Amino acid sequence: MNDGSAFPNRRTLLKTAGIGAASVAALPLLSACTGASAGSISSATVPASLLPVPPGQIEPLLDRPKVEHALAQLDGQIQDAMEHTGLPGMAVAVVYQDEVVYSKGFGVREVGKPEEISPGTVFQVASVSKPLASTVVAGLVGREVINWTDPVIQHNRSFALKDDYVTRNATFADLLSHRSGVRTASGDLLEDLGFDRAYILSHLNQEPLDTFRSSYNYSNFGYTEGGQAAADALKVTWEDLADEVLFRPLGMSASSYRYSDYERATNKATIHVPLGNKQWAAKYRRNADSEAPAGGASSSVRDLAQWLRLQLGNGSYEGKPVIDAAALQTSHVPHAVSGPASAPAARSRFYGLGWNVSYDDQARVQLGHSGAFNLGAATAVAMLPGEQLAIVALTNGRPQGIPEAITAGFLDTAQHGSPMVDWLAFTEGAFKRIDESEKPEVDYTKAPPAPSPAKANSAYTGTYNNSYYGPLVVLEEGGKLAMRVGPPDKPTTFLLTHFDGDTFSFESIGENANGLAGALFAGTGGGSSPSVTLDFYDRTGLGTFTR
Image (cartoon, rainbow, N blue to C red; front, side, top):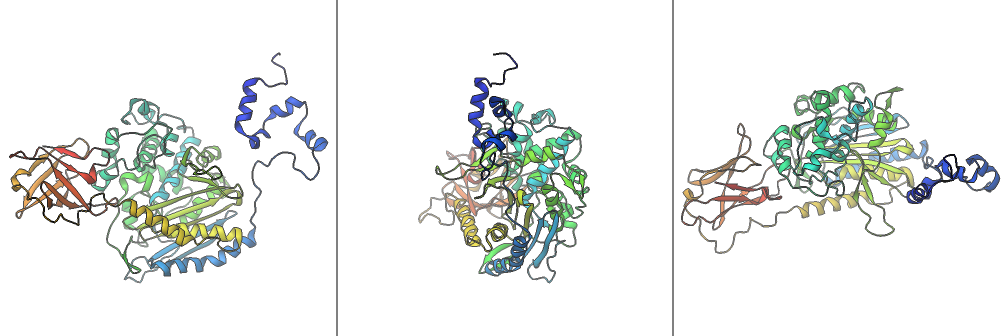
């Protein structure tokens, strides 16, 4: 066989078999094998009632009347969800065929105050920051400043993880698809204590890793490193990069990755937590600057609708290219299996670069992402690119599945005329199961009936060191014990309450707080305790402080 042969070699045939029937139709080798073109196959051998090849993508199944029917139901779906939960406020926008066809606010910015939510109200969008961030990084890929497959260490020389091979090889695509091996909560507890981005990223090398490129772990600070390294490639801040690449070109004047900009906004939604019986309270603030690319953005649905136009427009906005289409499309395809199929006929779920990627009953790709702050914000975005349809919902209440129910219910209504699932009941149940799974292993609210006495306070007081969290100081205040830990310029003081023997309890804080936690001092042996383990901070074995 010479090089000009029309017949494929064995390797090509095996590769063809491996990619499946749907992709075979696109391969020129088949027409080469028969000596016929795809057109001649169609006209000569295929009955008129059959397609010449399997379709490369699903033709749109929706039309404007179907979308308008779903839009007509949207107000009622939102109001029903808010009445059912007592949620203080929500804003929703819908884009269809490059037009913002819906943009409304509901409820109030803060309970007990009259100011109402509008399409211009600024919300903290939590992890909807991730697809925003991958859009920014795609902008640099399109400019050939970086490549998705560049090892990030090429652009951030201080980048380091626990395994040297992973450090040298982890790419932007690895970090932005959560397949680097960095575990889900890595760095999160440092953030809760007030450490900044530089400190947290420089300490990720102490966190254990899962298998590189063969595991999926949703990681805020793994993702943050990907965004930060992109900014490092241009020697600018992440916040300035996002302004220059995305927010300013789209006129997203209410959008920012700076918490200070959210705080300064005159029209902003305050975050709330539920108190029970449909009552909510604005109890906390959530500064996510340390994880800005992963969770620190703030925006309005008016702004985000423009970003959705860009997404559905393959990187073009108002007829002008803003983000390279090929670079943006790379963020929309599966890079990691986020949810393996649980049964032979079930579908797997995937993660792209900042997007959840799935396929619906009609084989259409659906892109989406949720955002969640346990301290009081929940958001969701969903797109059907083949239908040129997208929806975003922002709320100012702790996650209960509300924005997810609104986005899913709208798309369901557009396709079927009315929802086929009780989406709010479904999503509420899912979030309740998540809450249940995060309860502490030891219930420190229930003291043993006959607790062993503690030693004298002097057996526990002193300074304990830890390479990950920094020093911990145990001190006596008014005859009671307390401990101080965190950044030297703004440490947090925790009151210690005796529980049993050398074990004390304290109230956990921050986004990951789950009630009372334990401070377990090592036996004193008649002298000072040599170490203390904080079980809340010991999830990956890093929570022991040594005197």
